[in-house]
Amino acid sequence: MATVMSFYDPETYTPDRSVGYLIKTCNQTMTALLDRMLADEELNTSQWSAMMTIHHCPAPTCATLARGMAHDKGAMTRLIDTLEEKGLVERTRSADDRRVVHLSLTPAGREATFRCRDIVIEHWNRCFNGWTDAEVETLIALMQKLRRTLEDNVPCP
Image (cartoon, rainbow, N blue to C red; front, side):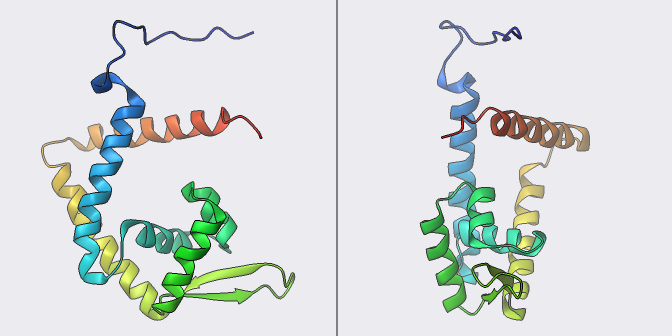
């Protein structure tokens, strides 16, 4: 059996040193900021994230988006319904399996996705002002490593 590294103990485990708490508060702050920045596009952060995922994912479906974005299928279906009503996303039944419904961006959806992407890029570049490229790359690499660790350790239902 592998030895488990012990980093935390009751004396050092405080919110300001808790990885989970820091990730949660950073995400909440980022989402609130981005929601305000994307308001002129009449999109929120979750909608834009779904659109970016559709753009970058081969053969996306509601189920693959829900898994990738850690949403439940019902919430993802409602989010896609909204994007479809706005004319930004379209659903197409698979020719191979009629039960599978693929998602794609409409031309208006692609334009909105890229406008929002540029807003988000500008925002993150402002956030990382004063950081070195190496610091940003290290943060990204560590976050990716943490994501893989968490995905590998999620208990199966």
